[in-house]
Image (cartoon, rainbow, N blue to C red; front, side):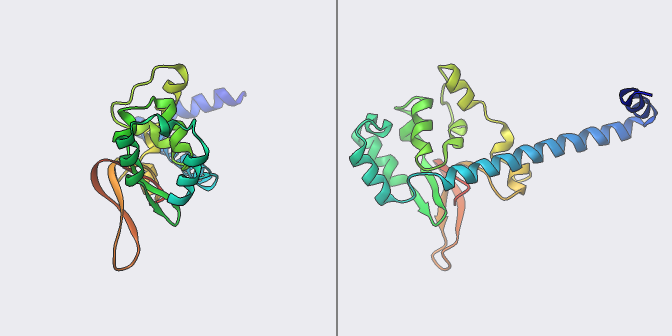
Length: 189
C-alpha cells in the first residue's frame, strides 16, 4: 500500500480534535524553526559586522565618503550616530527616525549591515519598498521580531523590538530593552 494512501487513511480515522491539535503543533514547530533560523542569522550578522564600536564607526565614515550615512543631512547623521548604543555584544539599539526620513530601504539595509542588524530594516514603521529588492528586505516573517512576549522568537531569547531602546542598569552593567519611541532594540542588547 503506498505511503500517501496509508497517511490519508490514518488522517481520516483521527478525530477532528486530534487533527486540529496536530495542525497547531505543526504550525508552532514551523514558527519555532523560523525563529531559530532567524536567531542564527542574527548571530551571524552580528559576528561578521565590521562596526562594533563608536571608534570603528568614525574610522569607517572618514574612509568611506560614499557611505549611505553621508547622504543624511548633518543634523540627522549626528542624531543617528548619537543614538547608537553599543554593548559587549554589538549594537544594542539605534534610532530609526533619522534614517527613515532620508534614506531608502536599500540604503538603510546597507547602513544597518555595517552593525550586523540589517534584519531590523523590516520593522521600521512607515518605511516604503520601491523596488523588488526593497520588497524582499521589508517582507520579513513576523516571527523574526519580538513584538509580543509570547512570540516564538521572544521565547527563544532573541528578537528585535520596535520603539524600545537598549539601556543599562547602572548597578550591575546589565542591558535590557525599555520603551522609547523611535528606537529599535536589537538582540545584542
